[in-house]
Length: 194
Image (cartoon, rainbow, N blue to C red; front, side, top):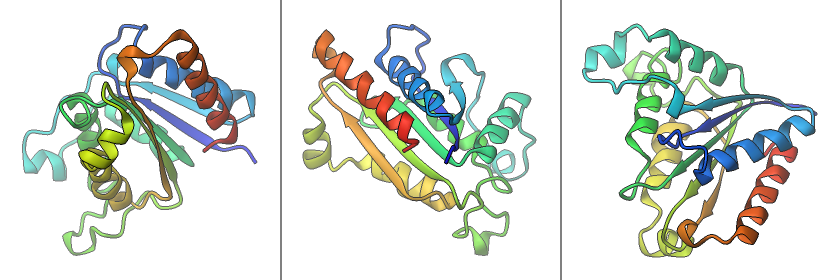
């Protein structure tokens, strides 16, 4: 059964040599080859500002680029979020994306007493995080805090689930052979729509 998938490439550097861009492209290729409908959002090419006030967060009118992203996310069955770990967390541009796109009225109810009931129920997600350290160190020593925060405080809070993750460590020392294997794995995940 084909799915509608949105691939969110959260690397803020537009340099095509970045591994995150290649991973996003490989996932998209695999998904399209299996007949899934794919929308690819490359945040390095989308103008998104952070939310600066509570009034803007609650009642601000999203810019056209943000509305386009909301349309893509709203139409998707499955979200794939790919980003590099920067200073122990997601890059600021990706955080701004979530602040702007996952607003009250779109991702969560406007009634503060009912915020636990997310509006994006029925969607699943995969989060792919690249990092310079070994992935096991991020998970076991650092507790994968930013990944847990994204999963619990943004995605689950919005009603998305299940949420799976893929951690890719030691990217600076990644050999051509390892890179080829990583891209093949991403194509397989895309083909499966997971």
